[in-house]
Length: 318
Image (tube, rainbow, N blue to C red; front, top):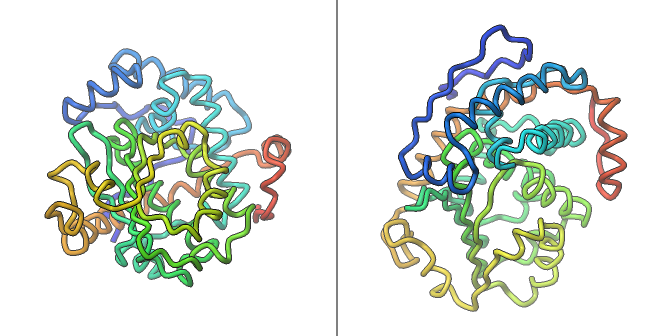
């Protein structure tokens, strides 16, 4: 059940929320060193971005709360013009492909089942402030992960994590165990669908990725994984490390965060996953409330089509 109410999307609000930095000191340090963020920079950038949104006639409805706008400012290291561009791309993506990036509902039994099967775990934050996400690919049932359901599931997790400031600042470290992967997992995914979701996950969502560590990729799965990676942001590809065995990969878990079966004692299935899903469920109204944002589709659609001609795989319901 949702614990938090959806945010307003009226961009002409008379008074904005007063932002307070409440995270541990490590995040203040990371924010300063990696994102050029401090109290003065943050306040100035939020003011400039809000003014730009208010004066932009093509953005009709938008969340104006600090936490939402900081997604994009932190993503672009407080370059206001680049953050505004990232916001436009994000809003346009959602309008162009609503069946992939809207109606992300944690009350859906499919979404709950996909998460609690244990294929995806949001393990927690390491000592550097990074949020560790761990995939056990063999746990995905191909019939459940078919498009667009599989893409919607990951989009739901990304939107949920972007509501957490520790993720906005610290970013993600991704761990992947491909042991016993079912080669049918991506059998029903077209190249354009794979390109769409990888562009979304690595470019259009304002998510910061650090290193990725992956192990035991079956040789027969190499072509499809290479195809998927070809659609990924080049900077992210450079940070991917692959290992022949799981023991090499698991060394990159901090000892206190290593799961059972991977050199540690963290109980993902019994403790971590149920607690994280409860947190996601509490954000249900917040995430669904994103659908109330609105842009001038007739203005942005031609620009999007020109920039992303290879992604014309869906006609949105406008």
